[in-house]
Length: 336
Ligand code: TRP
Image 1 (cartoon, rainbow, N blue to C red):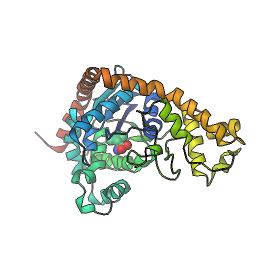
Image 2 (image 1 turned 30 degrees about the vertical axis):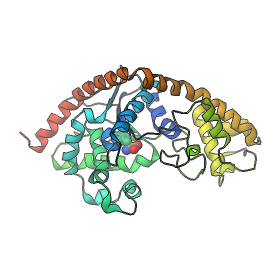
Image 3 (image 1 turned 45 degrees about the vertical axis):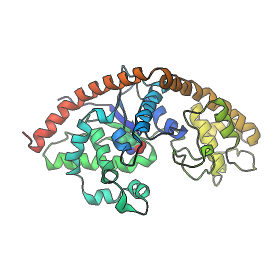
Image 4 (image 1 turned 180 degrees about the vertical axis):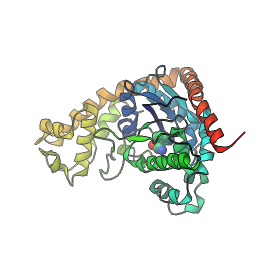
């Protein structure tokens, strides 16, 4: 079996309220890898159900992430877009890897601690094993590179540990490549528009905290106008953003949307007031986002059949890549 050199795998959860953080921190980076890598982009519905999801909403949210991938410029003909539950290899390999990963490793995962909260006894077993399923996603295709946000770095480390231990335990040489994280862009961490010290989140009770991929131009402009800042003008240098979380966040968003560095944004706007910067940011955000949001809306309103057919085709191609890997895994483990 040939070894892929530059195969990318990544995933986004269909949990609703796709927002600017998902776009700038993940989806936009996925788009940029298409010229240089063979890309597999998954809608991770198996991961989503580690916490309760309303079945109707899960279906709609799954289509919405698929539409966001396409509307953002991922080409489902050259590359692969599909939803995780359609390819059995994810769940099958996850079981094997559950038997490779150690409880001690999972006990160190900070995201589980955050998501499970105080009442850990009531968290699902799936939520605990979530990082092992993520390792299976990547290793099922022997992917070499994984674009992720900062918050997923620990899970990717775990995937590397699992790959290494499988290779050692089963005398499999370097059968599973150790996947490399790709962490990109100025605004991989987009913060809440209401509180620049908290991450932009789908579950924040305030709608004004996030720009979603369902917002129209008016909503985008309004949310930016109301974004939390401070009374001082913008600083001339990046160092001047220290201790000014709201300002730092807006400059970071501008930089990411315009493909500039924060330093370059401050060359243009240093010394100016937010009264001037915010309208410029709103205009930029609308220009960059509204082609995407309107195409998503069109697909969701008029073209669900296309989305569904595209996901099915993607799944078929994904199965074809995963099948020989799974066959090898069975041999290593001793399954007849
Ligand atoms: N855990 C990732 C997130 O919440 C989503 C994900 C699932 C993923 N499987 C993956 C990302 C595999 C990269 C590779 O953002």
